[in-house]
Amino acid sequence: MKELKILLILIVIVAIGYWGIEPYAHSVMHGEIKKPDYKYSDLQTTALTTGDPVKGKELFMANCASCHGLKNDGINPGMDKNAAIASFNVVPPDLSNIASIVDHKFLAAFIKNPQEATKNPKFAMPPMAQLSDEDVGHVIAYLSSVAKKDLTGKDITVEACGRCHSIKYQKIQAETPADNLKAYLGKVPPDLSVMGKAKELEYLETFINNPQNGLPGTSMPRLGLTQEATEKVVKYLDEIADPHREQRNKLGVWVLGYLVVMAGLTYAWKRKIWKNLH
Image (cartoon, rainbow, N blue to C red):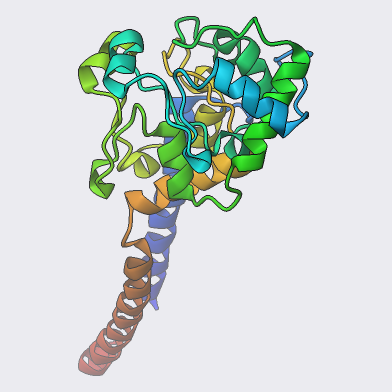
């Protein structure tokens, strides 16, 4: 019994070390993690989020299509990709599914003033001051009418992050060249292949919601993703960071079972061999 007691003590110590020390270390590294604000309550805008999709398409073609494409509706951007990179140091995104992954209040505020909405004073897109509050509602209604509603975590990650971030383990290359990203943001954004292991998932969710909460002073703009879209991105990053986790966990159960059986046999053998000395 003495050996079993020692074994139990060791198990308890290891468990405390694994489930206690690691979370404590993360809390020291990251401090108190702020809760995501999916209402984007800091944005005060009078722009509408609903309107007439037909009018919205006319406004989109007149005000947005020079830089942005809309593949879902067969619209190509008026500016060549290389010309856009030369002008802005970043590829303007295709807006086909923007209305299904970005909060509409954020989107309305973004159209009126991208720098304020993104928390990035150097954000490349200029404010659309020529659009009235009603015009913004029409544009959002149009974008909503063409956006796909069943996007996967991978789809959203590529849409929201793929212009600046690569995911090399998934063979996803950033749309914008590294030199231009460095000129635009001050540094090349990190590869996201193992970000789901490098950071706590709670931290990632907060960071995506508002990068300034996770890393004050960062040049990464706020994306304005909805809660559902953010959670799908975090889940995808977690899955690709450790793609064999499920298989390893299943194998782990068998390994632990094997060790328990062998420990029992070893203990029985020890009792049999040494029983005359006890």
